[in-house]
Image (cartoon, rainbow, N blue to C red; front, top):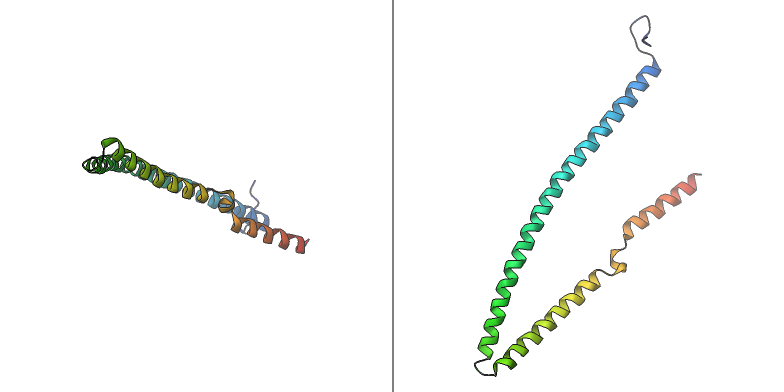
Length: 131
């Protein structure tokens, strides 16, 4: 049975119900669109990461060859063991500096979502003031 009036107009309740249904459909559509877009972007990020890792592996192989060349050049003026040791120690020091820098970037202090925490505190304060 329709809730429309005899003159063909719709009642307020029916109009509000239609608006609520339309809003739900709009939100569902937006969520579907966002999910689809995020899936596409995630696929793109994964592909970029694969290429990045591949490039890093090739560059690492090149670095190994360069380091062997440096050790071979030093071996012309030093014993081979000493040249290899010097190059090895220098690379370990450089690697340790990189690792230390990376660890400092991963500290809990730098990973705390400060802006989100601040925003949540402000929201809680606004809610307390209005209650």
